[in-house]
Length: 516
Image (cartoon, rainbow, N blue to C red; front, top):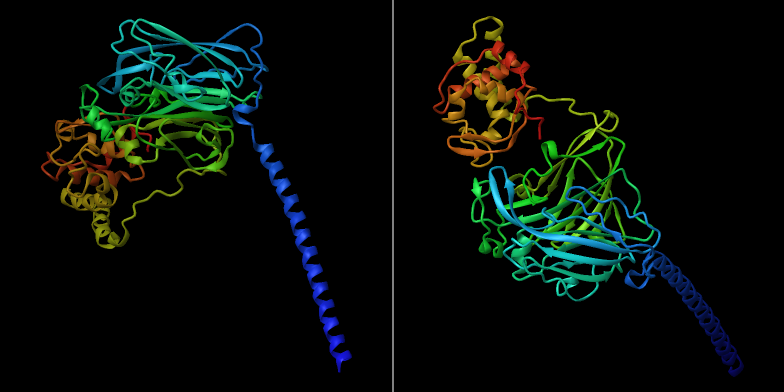
């Protein structure tokens, strides 16, 4: 019996030892695999790691000192084009000046270089920058400068405090590549920044940035005035609104319309555009977006690494980002803060106009444009059909036009101008009891067909929005809507014929809209 038990015991011990040995071997193999994997990860991380301020071309300046080329927005200085660090001299003057903030509205800005944002500065990583800050003799306040691209207490603020009629100088080495905000840091700091004292400094990596066809400088800021948005006259600064973070204006490059109309940014189909976008704040975060474009690359937060295929990028107050995108089709592309009331009701809007040949394979343009009335179509369209039949028979009455126009108005115009014709104050002008219509009733078919862009005054109130053209409507439909508007809500009455609508279609007014 004992020999039998002994044999069974020995077999179990042997089996246990085999299993334990196999498990140990697998564990050791796993450890080796983890070590190799860890080494690979470390190598990959090292390849992406620029070393920041501890690694770079930080030798002494080479050659003669270079005077920095500074540009006013939206222009950007040319690339440095240097292969070695240099001594770069930057001269910047603080100027307090009154400038337009919106049409018919002025504001006292405090500026770096006489513009909002301040002059764009471009240097190379490793450069030694000798910074000269001047404060104009007629300034009322002392100022300084805090550059986020400076390593040292206050980013240069403590070394650059400058009274009116004085100048200061300090020197720093550009240790980190990236796109950085600069701003005034004199107390009260928020007030100085809110008055426009900010700009961007680009520190190129030693190898430079990838080449593009066009570069532009855009900077967002929020402004606080005692007056309402677009209220005419001089707009003083309002400290309490700034503290409450309730801006009257949110703007690109310091003025409403700074990059629209004749001042719009431009590009051509086939070109690659790079935007250097900063946010001076002092309070709001920007949700920066270009309507109709997708950013191929975004160097988020102005740093070294980029994200690809981005629709909207966040830019914090006191932060920046770079973005590249390629122009595939022509048209007007709208730059906005996608917190949309800021764009369409406080001014954060700009235009990039791209010229060149159409590419219908990428974007067809509008292929169908017709009235859609949903579940109201049958009863409403009955009046339209009746008017059409009468018109064909030469027996159309004004009453039939009014009924047809009412149905068409409900599906085409009422969303903005409201079913009662009251519009939305400050956004969409009223049609009800309109002195603008009364002054020239022929404007009604004209505006329906061509839209309207730019300032108008209706019933004593200013409006400045963009009504798109409704030129998909037939001449009969335009005549019916016009007749309905003229005979509703206390308007002067009258009748618009198909022939008059056709004539209005052919005559394009100067303030016609190109659409949203």
